Amino acid sequence: MKKIAILTTLLCSLTLISIYAQNNYRNIENFKAGTVLLFQDCETDIFETDPTGRNVIWDYSGLKQTAITTTQWMVVPDSVREADDFPETTLIEKYSDGRSVFLKADKSKTYLLGFTDEQSKIKIRYPQPVLIAKRPFSYDEKATEPYTTSFTVNGMELSGKGVVSIEANGFGTLILPNKTYQNTLRIKIIQKQSDTLKQYNSTSETTVITYVWFDKNHSSALLKMTETKSQYHSDKRIEYLISETVK
View 1: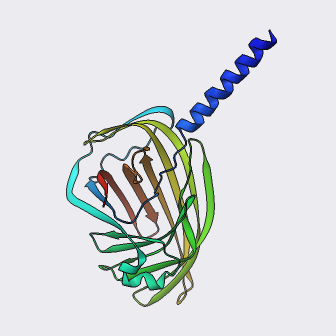
View 2 (view 1 turned 135 degrees about the vertical axis):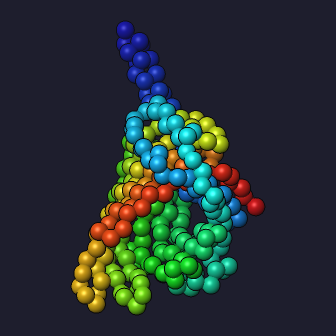
View 3 (view 1 turned 90 degrees about the vertical axis):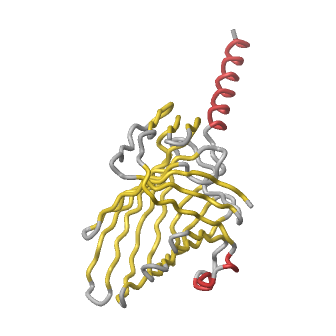
């Protein structure tokens, strides 16, 4: 009986190790310079994010494409002039719509240092950077960190602070218009931010909720669903990955 009990315990332990290893994602946002991503923008009439849990099937095969696609290049800091404003940058995301996102990344985490937008002429800094990815990450795992903001819009200076919470709350199959992905991890990111306009001492509150799905074959999210809410603005965006290549 003792041998049977030991064997049962061993099998249970091996099963738990196997489950943990299966759901342990090390590639989340773990980009190399030279990576090129292409995303398809979609209409937001389908913005359903439930359910959560294990062995979920998320069927987004009915997403309607817009005429917009966005290319994203991963480049080294030396190739972007504005990188001097973000000296801790290790990697930059350059977008075909004129945005540049400045990142600080190592093996275990990726932080957002700031971004610039050529169209709106906005430059935002995060003196205490924003956690955007943690590696490895597994189903039911959570991470929460504070951050601070500093930026100028139309000559008005704003500064603030926020908290970002990341939770892997789903595991299963993701069905997109272009492909079906097995063994995907769904991550929910909640970013709550409070900014103060220095000239008028007025405060605005913004909440950004993002859902992203990852598999183990891509560093990029396969699907991104983002909802932004504040006193002055609300917006939704959906886009899915068409391709990820490394040059």
